[in-house]
Length: 378
Ligand code: NAP
Ligand code: GDD
Image 1: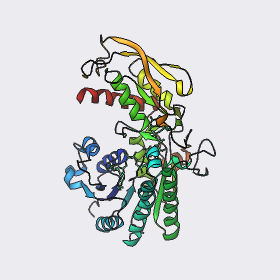
Image 2: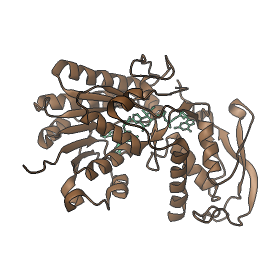
Image 3: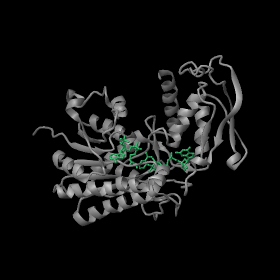
Image 4: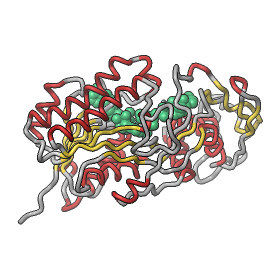
């Protein structure tokens, strides 16, 4: 019998995780279908950069393996039609308005996409009579734990979401459980803790930091403004975490899995490590709104051209000064904050054989390296 190519349907394919997951599935020989929003300019830069020149199994071309479909998680008919047409073996529901702070500004839209959008996927599988064939992965989140009731968090820790985003994801979590229990569907939740990469959106704190530090080291930005620097997160690498998504759908039984590193760091520690990547120490002074980070960095560029840190060459003889490089700006505070998240990944280790491969310093270094090169390429 010939080798059967598995078909995967990824919503949110243009996002950080969508791009890494596409890379993983293409290298495993999958036919990948993705839901892509219509935007005024093409929005597939991450997929292009990660997968554009990927050698595929059997010498297949990208055009033979990757299919992007216009659509939107808020459009029930579109979702149902696509699921019926594609008849996927696996669905990865990654589409979401994924920014926690933005969800306070757009709560209704966030719930439409993140909560009802998940229901639309589950119901489309049922309507298409695919409940016995299609495995569904739901992108659940450590934001479900919000005001944490236990440290570290496990699959049994009670939920206490702290944002419209978290509440919408709670609905999606339970709908996934409900379709599994009601219709025997293979529907699983991956409860993923924060995961980052050079392809992280630029308004999430890690990428905001690495981009800003790269600009400061090249004289293109005077300082970085942040909100709550005491917040602690369990930060892993997106490349490792999409491997866990795939493993969840290959397991014998559906279920709910924490995916985390088991280690946490504060926002302040992330900033410190980003500067230390190029050997620059940062000194923290003051508290609360008055807290600042001070470092010796290149003067601001007079003509807006990058001067300073050149990857592979270091800082060279650029004139330097000591100045405030980090300030607190309350505009970046949230109406309700999630102060601390720390996952216990024991179940995914023992049941799925999954382990995070990338350490916290490796993650920060990879992001800094990428953004320093980006500054000089732009
Ligand atoms: P991301 O980079 O923000 O990507 C979100 C994706 O969803 C993008 O492809 C986006 O399309 C798409 N999308 C947004 N609204 C949509 C709509 N109305 N219809 C169709 N697609 C829509 O997020 P990510 O970091 O890759 O995260 C992937 C998923 O995992 C999300 O569900 C997120 O909530 C969840 N999650 C993430 C983390 C994390 O730390 N990264 C942790 C736990 C859970 P555009 O490109 O057009 O905007
Ligand atoms: N974005 C941002 N910008 N966050 C800041 C800033 C800032 O200037 N300053 C401090 N923070 C703090 C936030 O208050 C939060 O406590 C922490 O940094 C992390 O913020 P984000 O990077 O925006 O991520 P998040 O933890 O709120 O949400 C991400 O992780 C969730 C999983 O726990 C998103 O990817 C969610 O989609 C995901 O579910």
